[in-house]
Amino acid sequence: MTEADLTPPILIRPRDKALPLLSLTDLRLAETQAAAGLPAHTLMARAGRSAASFLLELITRDTSIERAKQKVWLVAGPGNNGGDALVLATALHKDGIAVELCMPVEVKPDDARWALDAARAAGVPISSAPPASLDAYTWLVDGMFGIGLTRPLDGVFATLARQLSQRAKARPRKGGVLALDVPSGLDSDTGTVVGGAHDGKSNDNAAVHATHTISFIGLKPGLFTAQGRDLAGAVTLAPIGVDVGQRGTVQLNAPELFAGFLPPRDFATNKGTFGSLAVVGGDTGMCGAPILASRAALYSGAGKVHVALLGAGAPPYDPPHPELMLHAIDTLPLDTMDALAIGCGMGHGERATRVLHDVLKLDMPKLFDADALNLIAKDAALAADVTARGVQGDPCVLTPHPLEAARLLGTDAPGVQRDRLAAARALAARFASVIVLKGTGTIVAAPDGRVALNPTGNAALATGGTGDVLGGIIGALLAQHLPRYEAALAGVYLHGLAADTLTAQGHGPAGLTAGELAPMVRSLLNRMFYPAVEL
Image (cartoon, rainbow, N blue to C red):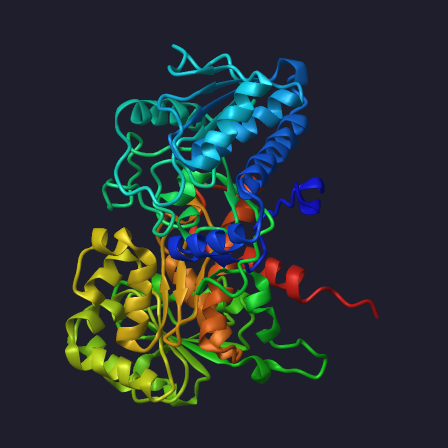
């Protein structure tokens, strides 16, 4: 045992931290290099001990059931994930917690065999078959398979995955389901179920649905996007003493990545300081979308917000927000704006196409969303103009949802969802633009290779208009002269955090409307970045 193993394990909650997200290749390399300089079995011992510390913390926190009545059931797979479960079971057993471990197939690797011998020597109850019911246990632990699984769960392991998932989905008031490293059956790189469908729907027969996941060495991108965010539950990191250094090209989005780019709000500032944004869209009968986006821009700190409408029959002003300036598009000099947000309710007509060709000639930050993206996808000349802007050093910001991303890439939505990180990178490279690939675990990718995965947001955003609100928020930040990538990071983070905060207050996830997000974004901006100054 090293000196590091005598100190309490380090456990990190990733919220609000710009932590690296490591691919399978990164993790394997870090693990191999770390193990080479340590005594045998050290990393497995640390992983199991960290999991035990974490689970004991959860057990202690639950005052509704006495510690003496806590009962933990663990399942160990045949590999090193099973070895982690054995170390965890041994540590809990020695600490006086009642445990039972199921090992359908005896573990094979040397480290796991060492853990099995230690568990047997300690007297941990081990069986080869699960009990008829898991209802008697307060906590269930998934130690079947970790990273690197290449085939779908089957046989007894698929059956156990279903049983564990049933407990997690029942939203237990006491106890829960803890996954070791990743939920078994989850692809740690992509967040999809190994061998499952890629339509964004969870395949409960093929992966464990956990309430908590403790991730060893580093965080995995698959825990935060696609199906992984639902399957992983609340994620905690246990570094187990492995320094991952600069490995990983993906970061978890957090305020430290963009806070330094927000403009100061000095006494001597004025509305011109914070820029003018024009929201361009609103064909006949579709002015609601640009109005939503424009209201969000107001609440996100833009100095002046204009709405440039393509269609007829729009109101002369917005009664709830007369601060917005509504114009027919031909009457607003777009070249005088500090930024443009284009596409909300724009339609697919010839006039919309002409407007896009015209605005792409202008020299200011531009965000393209919704109908604008579909027009770019089907018009090769528009697509070429977007790419050319980026190559010339003026990248656009594109904010597609998976279906829009599929059209831009010439594929289908399941193809995008199969590997969201790869899709975002491909879009950033093809269009030389900053990409905001929306969806669970929104991904922001820059043409220079920077990528961030956003941890905020929930099902409250699954309602019409929330994408328009996001476009308005990012547009406002562009008008305030944030760089494109940082404006996108800040926009998606605040947009998701607004939904999280409103949900915590009881206003979601069901029934939250898009228009409710903007006032909360304003509150978060001021609370987090512009605290009141006492005079």
